[in-house]
Image 1: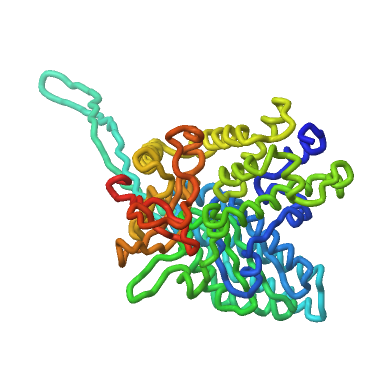
Image 2 (image 1 turned 135 degrees about the vertical axis):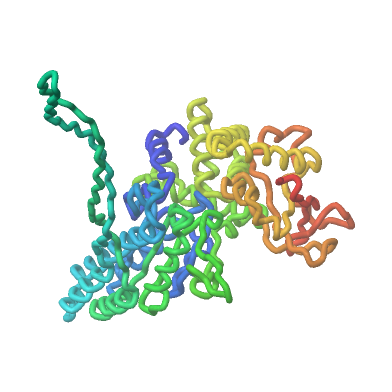
Length: 519
């Protein structure tokens, strides 16, 4: 089976990113829900957090498809990576207001196009009124010419030479001569110039008024999906959020869903007296959905392994013709597929563990392992191949994205946690969790969040988050005497060196990361 050319082609065709998949049916057929989608199926404004590769775009694309045939909903899906122009990101002379307004007008243009398509393809008796209101909506952002008088002063100096005829008469002789004299003259010149510049003026009351009229006459609601929010410049994000708040948040006919990386997002600038620029998280927009919370392997290994079994099977099946696996190999279920491709359950479990709950890492490690096994002429993928593929993925993807400072810090954490404690998990106080080093390592998928808000009985009043080191940081130690404790210990007895973070009495070593290690 591992040498089947159609299966080889199917595996190589799996898209690494959902937005690269042009066939929406493949996105739908390969989706496996773990309980996130039902929480998005509402009219609440929400932010969906998740690190790179956890499936934010896949979920949002699936959510978009659910509503595509609804005649009373207009879906506008915007990828923030395609917004803006080069000066907005590189020209420091442009004001923040100009950069933000230009990006927001790009978003308004996308909304206009989506609404225009809805009116054109789903017309009703008031479509003409909807079109007129749409035109008014598009004019709510006005391009104006700003004229300013600029005075330019010029100074010039000239060298003038005067020729004077001179007559001289005395008793001896009569003489005639020419005398030349040199002199300077200065002239000041003032020139008036007019400097012209375009800027956008956004009339928020008009924008909101006309947009709601469009939705009323077109008999539709607007679902605005903003993906890759974190691709926007960090300094612009809170002001753009303020524009969203003024334009969309208050309308019951508009629903906003945003996909973002938590540690690369800035939605709010606090001001005096509890006022804010941007979103007030939890009030203006909900921010309690985090994909990472649903894929923690250590929290529920059995359930996560089951989910990843379905993910792999559906991704490969969607790239094959209907019933190919069934007709040729008699494979009808995901478990049968795993049994045929892997040497045994331990090999697949190792793949799930190596991915650390990140779907893109899971797909890539499997891809490396499959073609390595195929190249070596193996009948299936064994555990040794998975371990080597996990090491390759860490070195070629994650490690290369760490700068020298992060390399040094992760090395020190590894020495402290694995070297000194022979473990792979550690605790970080809530205050230290916002430390830039922790955030950067988490964002780079080199450390992984296991549990938030743990209260240790030996340190009452202090809340901790529990993290684990990435599989790639200790993969070379597997099957050696230095291998860290991987599984949580069940039912610990009176051992002061352990803590019990989960309800089923599984414990880990009590290792608290201190600020001196990070600083």
